[in-house]
Image 1: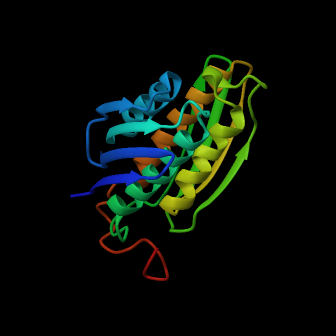
Image 2: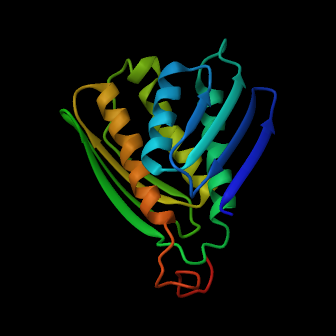
Length: 193
């Protein structure tokens, strides 16, 4: 079973997260940040990963700790669910348009966390979330999941740009974690990810 369940508590957040890589895209998301709930629900739907996220965070301060810590926990859960990577496709990419916005994502589940994020948001940011925090979410996710990701976004509407990025990341992740029937070992010349 390619699943993970994590409960992480700090002085800033309390997060319960579970996922199933071989799900149907069902999502139950409660972060306390409505726009981010929308993004994670879209992520679950388009990755076909069943995802449950329940968060209590210090939102009276701001959204930073909550969004960052969700990235950390989601990344950790993805790494746990992928395991040694035996049989996975490993590399994948996707491009998703949303009206005037376009997001392109290329992923490598090779065990090395790295993010290149090109493009950005207006000073207001999507859903009232500072745009740099969206990039930081993906950084936290990738560094804890061991994913190298290149994300390129363009457009004029912050909501469209952000949603296209989450959907493109989801579509690429769906393809990268897929089991390749032609591969029975770890897809690396090193023999390990």
